[in-house]
Amino acid sequence: MASMMETLTTLRMNGWMVAVHNDYMLNGQAMTFWLFTHPKTGRFIKGEGKTDAEALEQCAAAALRLSLPAHAGGIVAREEEFAHLDRCLKAPKKPSATILQGAALLRRY
Image 1 (cartoon, rainbow, N blue to C red):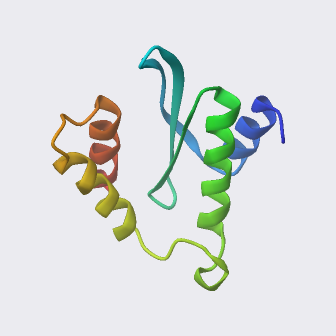
Image 2 (image 1 turned 45 degrees about the vertical axis):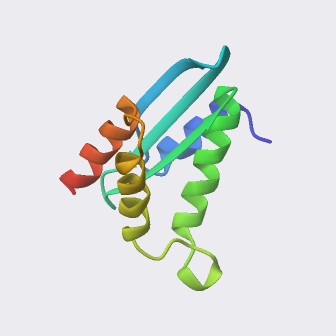
């Protein structure tokens, strides 16, 4: 596993920009959330975990999936991203500020 700084540097070198980084407590457990956007593609990736390294590895894996062609397991369309956000926004509980920020970012593109 790459170090947190290596992962962050690689993401930035590939055009990903940090949109949101949030440390928070969930049921007494420290958690972290990262959301990146890519200005050229209008895509976003996210990662969440107990450590920054864990969350950034999720982001790196998502970035890799986005770079693959559809037949190799890449994500086919942004509709999947919108569908996920719509499910979060329609959930019975109030959506988090992070979900609302992500929805606002997506709708700009």
